Figure 1 (cartoon, rainbow, N blue to C red):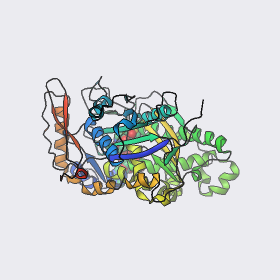
Figure 2: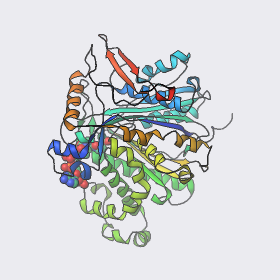
Figure 3: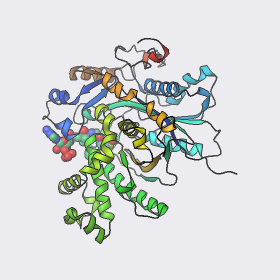
Figure 4: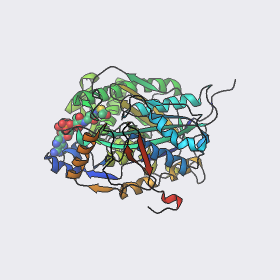
Length: 464
Ligand code: ACO
């Protein structure tokens, strides 16, 4: 039989963010913490907020409908649909099954896939499954659709400013403008209790903050080293940061990502020969004898590598932090919000031919480092140009969001907490701020069945 289909990757991508946000500087004042703690210490500018009008289903309905509509994809062109999420509102019924209400009216029900869960890694697992499906005997020649969506909310306290929400949908198929490098995935999985959600009656996780950071950084070390080893064999050359034009990370908060890029620089130094260490990294001479596993919270090491990698951070990673800095941790879509941010930061010709490294992390833990290559041709009319031009609403939506006061944010959080798993329930949140085409919850009936409506779409000629 023939070979695998060529250039399997992302054909189209779409993002949905909440229409409300809270300003992190205002939140610092409201929470009574020192000025700069959230904005400088965590590197966050704003945080996306969902009221009780939105849940994981509504976010997914919005992003899937928008992706298909904008890219003129027929419902019958989809052969697989899988959702990655850790926002569990039903212990049995999948979000995927809820999304089928978009397809059924078109007579389309022959769609594989259900939901995948492991903290922030679910979206990546769904993506890997979609790629495997396209490359398998089960493939029917249609597209796979991957949806990652979450509402990240924390109990009052230090973790609360690292919340956020959003959804990303990715259309996966052959001859794509963003092509995954085959055979170059590095995975690291372990059993740890760093962040988990054992209380099924609450939206809030149990977080061991320090352990979660240590696990994230150690998973990054492991995945990156395995990736470099595999890629070195594959390309028959030494692989280090210079191999990537951009490096994207799962982003719990932006400061951790800057530290993570610095961590990769430290790995490059650590893995270099003695001669290379002296030649390429003279400023790190004092770190010759470090034990990598003992440096996760070593401030001297961190300062040295942060300084040395400043420039690399601003060229290779900073452009991917637009959405994360403005919306916060979206959990499963976070890394893919980074990809969207990168794609809207440059024009197609500048992105053409570039290689992108991606680090995905989900507590508990599951993690992976993998890469993709952007197609060489960024000219008008190409698939790459089309993919990027369909993302013009991203920056517009960011600017069109409505700011709410921290008091109001806290009120919405209290309502979410009190109404969590209530039935029957009529949501209280206004629908005024929603972007055209947004789905929202209209009611939960006495049997816990959820109903949704959609804000008319300006694209269909209905003014909002
Ligand atoms: N100005 C500037 N910086 C400040 C200020 C200030 N006024 N105040 C504090 N800071 C700095 C601190 O020095 C610290 O910097 P460092 O990280 O370089 O040491 C940083 O701000 C954070 O402050 P801390 O007091 O150390 O931590 P805090 O108690 O605020 O908690 C944390 C931060 C751990 C990120 C918390 O928000 C949390 O638990 N979040 C959820 C868990 C998480 O995101 N983990 C990451 C991986 S797992 C995942 O993806 C969910």
